[in-house]
Image (cartoon, rainbow, N blue to C red; front, side, top):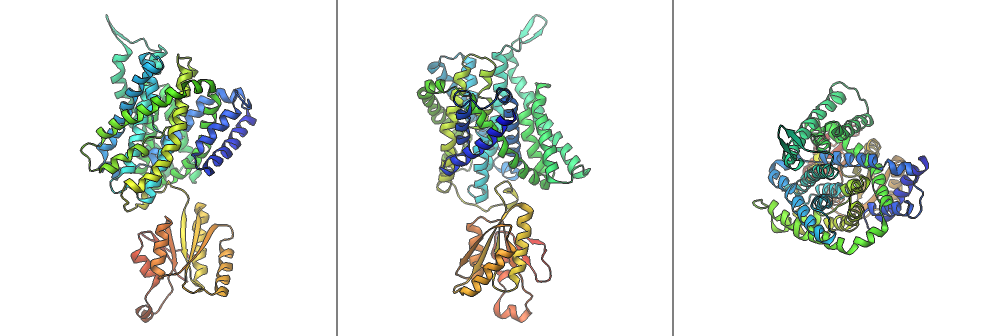
Length: 545
């Protein structure tokens, strides 16, 4: 089992990176590695690992839903709450019904199986949508109207809703429930469905909130944890417990509880929420490899070939008819323009994570049509994941307005990148030291900027030597730019989407500032990005936001 695990991790990682370098989402490379190493071709993954696939999928979905909850912005949701709620219900239900109706004719499924397929196909991909929307928030596209947050919330809510329906339909198809008998009256499972959905949603939200209070109490108030790694360990353990606890208490949604846990954590203790964002990003790096490699390993290639043409028809009708109708209904009465509504097509179409997590369950339970459902789930990933990831970033500048970025809401995007603005004076060493200290604390990067219209070679060589000496263990880049110094510093920081500007503040005499002006003060007054001022006497100073 251990050799197979190592093989999945290493080959899945390099397969994903190869796909990324070719311009495709990494998950496609991971699926391909699963196909090549699975039982049908390479047969190098042990049966024990394949048997444990269900548990690994559960862990992966738990992590990505926790990331989604931690990335929500409550202020923007309050502004677009009704739209986000409708985005979480109407597009998913419309696509489910259209896909189910098409499946009745193309695949001769019975009604419950066709509806189950619709629920699986209609689910949206946190693995593609969450990083895509967080990247848009980081760059400012659509943030003034909360469009990325509305899509994030709608995606998470729709996945929770569809996962609820999938679990109920699986129970119905497996004939696990025989209804409820009250004297001479027998209530069928379908009649109990509305009540069960209501209980699952209500209890899921409530349990998630209580779990968030517990985690804040353990980590912040009672100081059971002393490191960020321990916070992430406890948070991941609680989230996973919430997910599997629905096996003990079937009338509540573990997936909704996990998303509620992440959202409530940010509201109850924002610093703890920010620490957990980075930790769950690291966990997802490992979890997604297992999820998509195992998906490829369990895929039946001959079945995929059989469903290819009708599957493409089914996907097209589901997106263009079902989802388009749902998106139109969701944004009625909102202040979104037609361009912003049109952005929902690329921004909200990607499918991957949920399909990878639950697409194989009908086959594992021995349900009729299980092989076709798995093949269609994989086909939806192969088609919509790369298309959605690419089109989201390409169409955002064309369809959305760029707004002001809130630095407190973009902590889940990438590594810390700071700008160190230096001249050729001794103050440069102080600025570089401060930048190196920040980068080491966050495993970040430093962009060193020197603004000069006529740089001298000897002076630049000396500055390069000082930069190498101070940033010897830090990833860094050096830019030499001409221009007005304060204006160029702010322009470079904004264009590179940097998190902080670090600049020296020499101790001028009052008449020096009067005659020459203060570069650091000009940057501080004009920069929308946080500025850290470094004085000669001290290298650690407060941050001026």
